Image 1 (cartoon, one colour):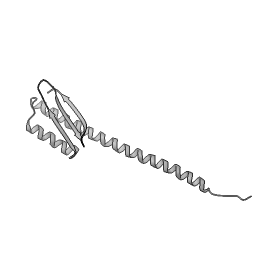
Image 2: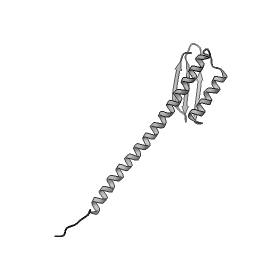
Image 3: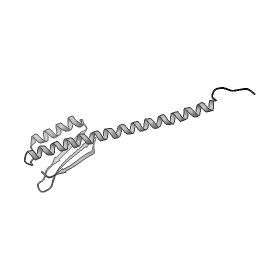
Image 4: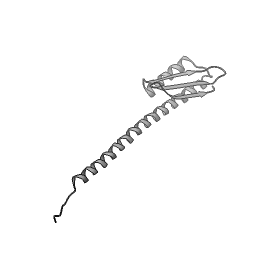
Length: 114
């Protein structure tokens, strides 16, 4: 009987298949993690913009000025990019609402009473 050393072709192919499946799973996990991280970053930026806008409106006596709107839209552009759109509405007895969307998807809807 002959002694065979090394691995067979079948063993090598099985090992390659296991490695390929593991690599594909890792790539999918990394891609999903990047999507979730980007979404969380947009939410943090939108929340920061909404809180600072709310504070500015409260400090101004509860009314929205043109300067407030300019600062709001400027903060959106700087903090979230050109794909960010926002609206700010205040109607007396109803609370004020700040809505922020990114790429036509709502990121945040922030209500407060001035």
